[in-house]
Amino acid sequence: MYILFEGIDGCGKTTQIELLKEQFKDIVVTKEPGGTPFGVKARELLLHTKITSSRAELLLFLADRAEHYSEVIAPNSDKLIVSDRGFLSGVVYALEAGFDLDFLIELNRFALMECLPQKIVLFSI
Image 1: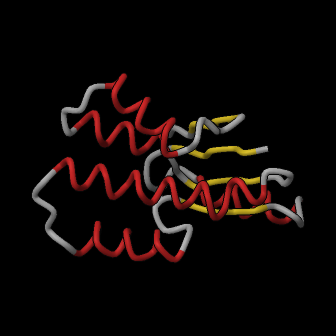
Image 2: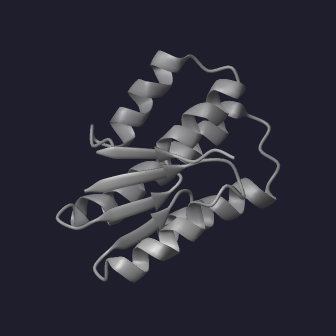
């Protein structure tokens, strides 16, 4: 089962993931961006490079998401997978940048090869 944990910084996602790791020994814990070697480099670019094009930034996030699916989600589909953030955060950030919701949903479905999480847990404080 693929579960996505979403929420603002400091809302308790990481704490809950740590508690789940104590209960489920075979759990696969990951995050976006940064859950793969490519994702680490993409995250570095996103954090430390001035990207002036919102399209370029969106495409970098989508490339990371596609790689994350290919390297982490698909190979572990028979296990419990919990991701600290994912496509939903990406959609929210891209909406803020002015992109169309339907367009973003299609792009993310493409990046995830139609494999959306079975559960989304939204943390609020």
